[in-house]
Length: 369
Image (cartoon, rainbow, N blue to C red; front, side):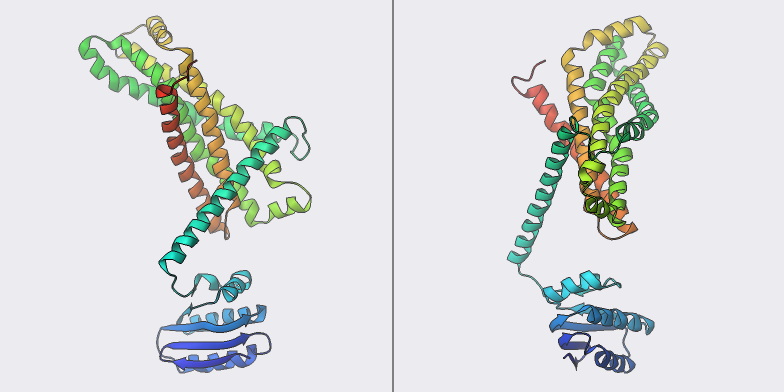
């Protein structure tokens, strides 16, 4: 049975907080509150051996009555088994108001390392499942919604075209304008076409398209999956023998793999067109000479490099969005946090991958087209 004892501003609860002791313990705590005049109270649970669902309901009620009296309660030194029960059954967020005994530096390092390894394993499993089901889906369509590939291609790719086109045009426009101010001093204004054509195909086209996708489509993927997790739709899919990765992620994987390279090609062309506008209006370069100069500066390696980057960026965005979506915790607030984390991580990983691919394509040996 549970017992109560006081020590200064701390209340110690001992024994088992179970259904048989709930009413007596609640009366004792109510008596303690009636004589308490401060705004903060600590309840030590270090000597609690067991808590059932009725005990968790008791602690929820204690917290609610203390708040009515403007008393802030902090639960400290919570045993691991008790903390797990609070997390599972509490409706008042008691797990966020509890603190366990202080850990040593080695325990903290071990816990952090263990969590990192678990996160990496979860990511590896997601990547493996996505690749496997994507490969299987090419020959066997069961488990994938009919028409979902086209639907996702429209949502992820086609609907993103206006913003991608606008940003690509402005990037090419400004890039040509800024470089023209320097090149015209040396009578080399025509080389603006070379500069913009190479930069748009190798770097600016793929990475700007990827960043737009990360902010627009990546956030959409993360929020959709996170909402399905919160509303237990993924559990419903599992109960119907449908794998959530195959049913939800794979159509998005197909769609972004197809649409992102296409939009990348369009962003390259539109960016070069933006530079052509500057060349024609500001540098007095004819459209035909500008076109010939731009085409002459490009080699097949530039275009293939941009397309390879766009496909890798697409996979990074869809996997990152799905990863954070499946890891959501909490309700609507958790969905927002997962979406924000997915966008930040996607942009960071895209830039990191772009740097690595740049080193590989331009300084690596044996990578020639």
